[in-house]
Image (spheres, rainbow, N blue to C red):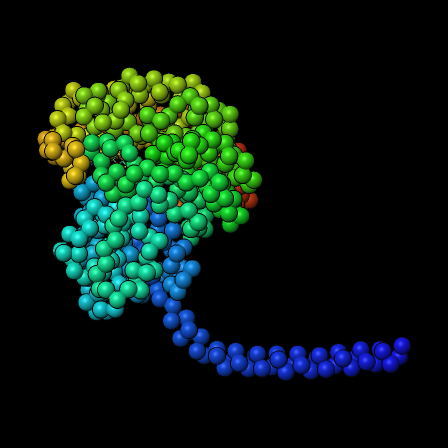
Length: 475
Ligand code: SAH
Ligand code: SF4
Ligand code: F3S
């Protein structure tokens, strides 16, 4: 017995010794390497990405960031310190493209000073302009369309100085790639890509290709992983989010599956097309309120039947207004927002009055308003740009004035009501206050108390100004 114990101690001692030798070798090796660590780090390439356009592009930039970070690239904060610069671009209106042209002009000097720098244009404008972009700006090295991101590493490693990859895919939905999201409250999840609606003014079907959807399983999986990472709200994304169709699984089925995800505090989606908004969808809203947020973005585009027809929007004014009534029947306090275009070719003043008429009826909570911008390749392009810039501006101004009044009216209707608020961050104007968002998508400012971002709280609305609600004890 005694011998055994001694043996055991002896064994331990020899173990200890071996361990000591190993630890000192390990530490000395690493201390010796310590001064060289920055060199190892600098072997990683730095990339910088700037995103323009819609939320789908933001999501795609997160996908690109995820791909690059999982290989030998680190994200940096400015174009000046980068080895690779990517501009994720938009083509929806002419001014979106002009912005990119001028940004590329600004970045040219970085290329002049550092020929090894790789400058890539990706996204919708890359898809739209393709070779033309490199022909006019030869300092651009890489043009990648929205369906070519899986190959970005291969393209960055290639010997060629100029690469163009703009094939559109009928299948690419970036399944299996997890986007690198910035910390926050809301995680965006792209559930479908492309658009088959072909509104006559719109470039998106040409830049994003045909509609295709992910499986419910992969979306639920991404939702769960986002919640595990600390996000509490999910916004589903798609050019026509409610046209979602994966092998017969439709959008309401997806919403239902997501309502079961533990830890999810709010579920949103954008942008639906009015054609695919039906009673089944609104029943889901009613049944899963407040988890499914009581907000719907219902792009009108125009109020006149003649213009709607020429736009190929597939609904009439009457149909649209019936839809609004149906939506409000199921969810009376729903927030409704919209997109409107003024100055579509041949739009008369009387046509424009029809848009104002719809606005008066619906009293939108908010509206994104645009002047018509002719896009080459689209059907409407052939109609010319018949409404003068002066008329477009006058119509836009009238519309904005009306919308501001409606926005305030809708906000004021909430005064005195207790509302659920998802806390987002400190208020921009006061360190004593925080801001959050109602389910109907309105910003509320309130005293900071002990609230933290991501808390779901209930407070009484006391005031409304501009586009903001307030919940202050003394109001
Ligand atoms: N898929 C979404 C929106 C895509 S583009 C939808 O159908 O609602 C976002 C908005 O840009 C559109 O709703 C439309 O109002 C506007 N838009 C698109 N093409 C435009 C053009 N050529 N000129 C002006 N506005 C345009
Ligand atoms: Fe463009 Fe119409 Fe498709 Fe929306 S639905 S992306 S406006 S074509
Ligand atoms: Fe622009 Fe492409 Fe989105 S054209 S609006 S970035 S889908």
